[in-house]
Length: 343
Image (cartoon, rainbow, N blue to C red):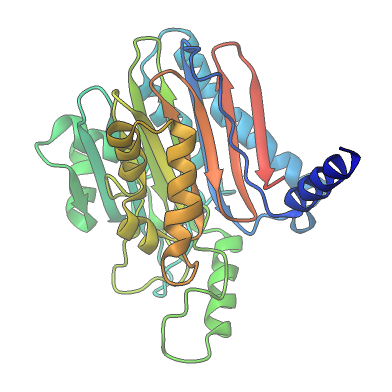
C-alpha cells in the first residue's frame, strides 16, 4: 500500500513539472447569469520577460477592459455591446497587437483585421486590411448590422466605415516604437528570401472577448494587427468566422489567438462548437481536444496559440498550448481572475 502511494506521488510530481495550461471552468450544472472572458494574445509570455512594473501595467489594462464589459452585463446590457466596448479598451492600448498597438507589415504600414459574431442570430461581420479605422471591432459590428455582407477588406472597408460614421484616423496614429523596433529586428534576423514565421513571437498579441448576457445570448469578437513583417496582403484567422471567432447560443462563444494559418486550417473556433453539438463534449473537453491535440498535430506541432470561450451555461475556458496567454475572467458574482503565464 505504501509503495503504491509512493508511486502515485512520483507520478503526480512528474506530471506537475510538465507545461500546463489553465482551464477555468465553473460547475457544469450551475448556470451563471452572465460571464465574460478576454484575451490579449498568446505566445512566449514568461515571467522572466516581464518586469514587475510591466506585469502590473498589463494586469491593470486587462482589468480595466474586462470591467467595462462586466459593467454592461451586470446592468442588463447585451453581450454584443460588452464584447465591442471591452475590445475598444484593448484596441486603444499600445500594449497589445490590435488597434493602436498593431504590428508593422513588411511595407512599414499597419493593417488591421477584426470580426464579431452574434450567437442568437448567427449573424457576423468582419473586416481585413484596414489602415485608418481607429476601432476595427466597431467596423466589424457595423458590417454585421448595417450591410447584407459578412466581410469587407481594404479601401472598400474603410469607405464603408466612413459612411457609417466610425472614427477615422491618420495612419500615423498607429505608430509605436515597440512595434516598429520589432519589425526592424525581424528584418535583420531573416537570412534568406523565404518568409520565415518562426523567428519571433510577434505573430501573437491578438485581442478578443467572449460574453454571455442575462438574456442567455452569447457573442464573440476578435481584433488584431496580424503578423509582424507580413506581406502580400496576408490575412490571418482573426477576421475568419469559424476560425478566429464563432458564437452560437446552442453551444458556445469562442475567440482565438495564435498562428493564424493553422487556426484557419483547423477552423478552431467552429470546431470547438461542433464537438459540443455533435459529440456532446463539454466546453472544457472540446477546447482541450482542439488546442492540445488537433492543432499541435499540424506540421509537427507548429499550431501554437489558444482560445477563450464561454458556453451557454456560463462556463468559462481559457485553453492554450503556449508558454502564456494574457487573459481575464469575471462571472456574475463579480469574481475577477487575471492570468498571464501558463502556471
